[in-house]
Length: 409
Image (cartoon, rainbow, N blue to C red; front, side):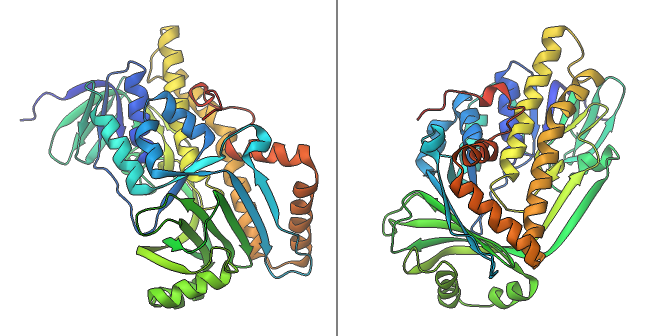
């Protein structure tokens, strides 16, 4: 005989970055919240660039003091057209100070961010954290009914699925996905180097995909460090996967034009297929999708996790609006409001990332010319450049209120 289920207002499934942030936001907004899942400490060279709006979120939640010591500011961005086209544009630089920011964002290793968010969650006495997976979930008219693998029942007025690309919660609700697979894999690594990065991120736009170096804080014995995300063809990925660290470092240094000097690899590297996945809907009865369960983007432009954090912030905002109106916090009105808040942002980011990646892989003189012309225009036209910078770090049309904090250090 099953014990009586736990009850709550909101159940968040998944204890990755997006899930933890959403759960903390919900409990801080006064909602009785349970989070289920184990912390996802992804290593293998994986980092995340928290753009300014996400930094504002963590400041508002009181989490930033625990995050900042492990993060490096991204004060500038350099784009280098290295696709081998005769229409190549000159390198273009963007500086955060031009739009009144100290930094576009801050780069941090995935594991360090999970540790900080996990500590923040545990410090909230009103947040119940069950480190177990959800084995099954059903959605009734008035509640979501979940059961853990340890046979614990949970009844919630609303469930938030932040349980990743494969999302069992999404599948339980019958929400399908569309997947675009690219002929690429992404290599990730942490690097130490002999020259300073000067808080500048550099992206080489190659014919096989972006090669991106992003600053990281120094450590004893390694004062200059960066993370690497290198999208490449499947063939090159297979070849580079078997290179030893010294040989791979030599190829990284050559691709980067030695701008960071001598390169050395630090720790394990990662390699994963590049794809874009979008859920057919972000909501179902008593369910809201958050983060990778709703959309998983290629590692381009630091858009993926930042998009997921905006999901969580908008979900808290929509639930708070429903409570203020005296309506059902897990009902169809709140869910439709959440979906409407997220629709344009998700569609625009997914479309832009897809179009950019395809433009590199097309190997078309006409497309190369248009991309080069666009880069040249960004470098030459100040208002256009500033508009692009502001749009890159947060939506121009709908940013969650909690992410609109004072843009200061």
